[in-house]
Length: 288
Image (tube, rainbow, N blue to C red; front, side, top):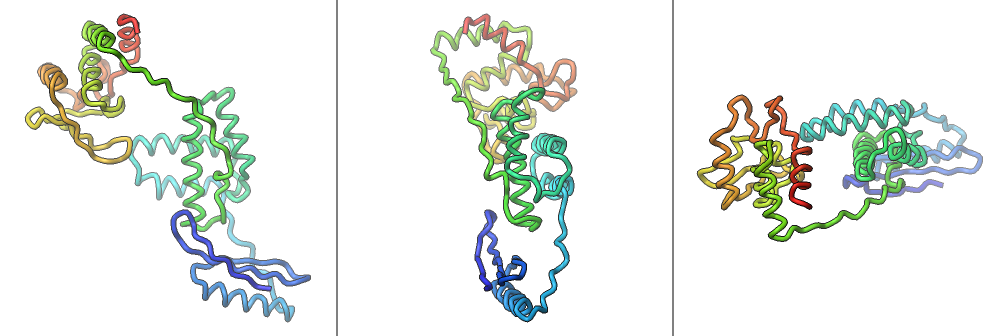
């Protein structure tokens, strides 16, 4: 008996899976882009099996996980930001090291779940949010491999439970606390701490956006900051007004000329400043 099943991949592609099941004969199946091709194959295969003229096809070509990683790096990663390329290339390499270089269709949800638990335990000790990102890039690799490359039928990562993320603590500063924090930042030995905290309070910009800010993105004439690369990948403009404009305008007078960064490292001007210790000291000084 021959059957045709229509299915739609996550990418929106329509595929037709033909299956032929004849008693005392091997069950066989094949996937096609057109229903007519699937129907034709099913009729021919069913007829051949009934007349005992059916000859099983050669085994389909199988691909290893390293093949998938290499192709993903070559075709998919270049479409992403530079930071994402570096991070996801490293994550995929770790998946390869821990899963082993086996066939992509031999990697089961159970194997992925074991690596997930391994990443969260010793010696890695990754946070749940980080492991979720590891699973996300692996899932996308399998989605592309199944829907576009047609290397396998399903994505095993979909059946793997994501780590539960802890609820973040929401903390709002009152006016007194904010004033104390700004005073502490202003007295900091690091020249970038006070301007960047004022900018954060005034604009709501993310830490990564501010640390990656370049002087060419700051327009003190039109009073705005243009963010070319945001977390969502969109280009957006941020108003630069009030205290933030005054502080950045004053800060621009003593800007370094050996780097395009607004907030560079003092020792390595081509690298963003590391404000973790100055920030922690300011928070402690402010009594927060």
